[in-house]
Image (cartoon, rainbow, N blue to C red; front, side, top):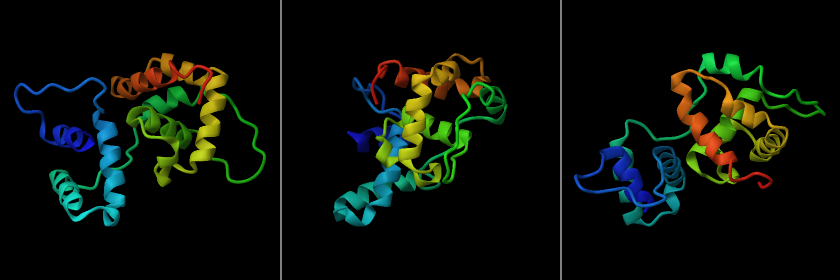
Length: 166
């Protein structure tokens, strides 16, 4: 199913073909393709051919991409709760928020967080803190530029059912 989702997101759907219930969105399919590309050597030859065919449809190997625009960050940075720092390398708030948004948009587990976004443990810890203190709700309610409303909606949907969990 993930191969078909990635294929249709890259090629478009044929006439009359509908998405199935719970079908992965383009971000989830892209994250899956990036994961498969990274583990290409572990795949069977026929699976490699399928992945290579999908990668050939893209101009580059899909992966993480920033979602928060600079104008949105100007608004959001004022909404984030200050954190005490207890040693070690503190992750930037923007990097952590990008990680949280990546998880919300792709549906990937925290353990598959791209390395560019930092330690999944640190990001998950901040996610839990910001979820508990209402910071993520403030981020979802903020009035942002139109280019940022897509990820904002994914984040709102992600945190809504997880009240008290994760």
